[in-house]
Image (cartoon, rainbow, N blue to C red; front, top):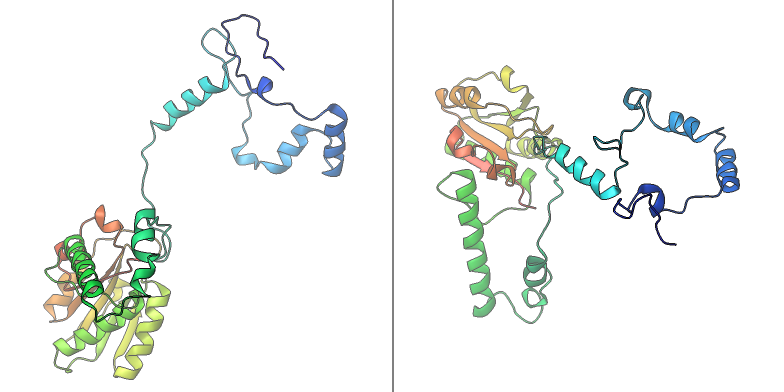
Length: 275
């Protein structure tokens, strides 16, 4: 059905012209099924009172001419451009990341990595070595630390290994490991389990309530923490170093593209999940 307007130059993409809505009888049947007397009553039940618009929707220009859908969208984009977008770090270590299709096809989904080639053959070994070198270089750059290993199983496992590294650095003389309560719960669980088998006393507390002494081998901080907060760890880092302990920071590798890296905070060890 052709669009009709009062003037040939008026926009034809009005809301009402773009949709063929339900007939009056259909509308009455749907409202009856929902036990609502009117569309206004349905909106009142659906939209919370606190955010419901009390005045009519203004979709006109300065000359009181009704705006078309394209014009309304342009105006909404202008309003959106005035916002200050922020990144959210909430997710307890599991972020909605996107793996580019070229990586999926050529690395993760390439059967050449796990079928016809065996690990000791030169072709596949060379490719793996190059991939690991690139990975380690990237991690070293993002963490601002001089060295990076070729990865472990996951972030929680890496935290347990970091605790073992802290104890080894003290020649086994220190047996306390302080863990921030703002660390991911799965990390705390693995560290506690590993600490039991190592004879380490794993103490979980708020970072401001850490009790430092000469028996502390290291501390574990989450950056950003499990609730997505970015806190200044400099005081805890200084206190740990003053008593001879090492500092482990569990960092979000993607967040490190935007925030100060662990190495610049004075961390001795950085761990994290690269998903």
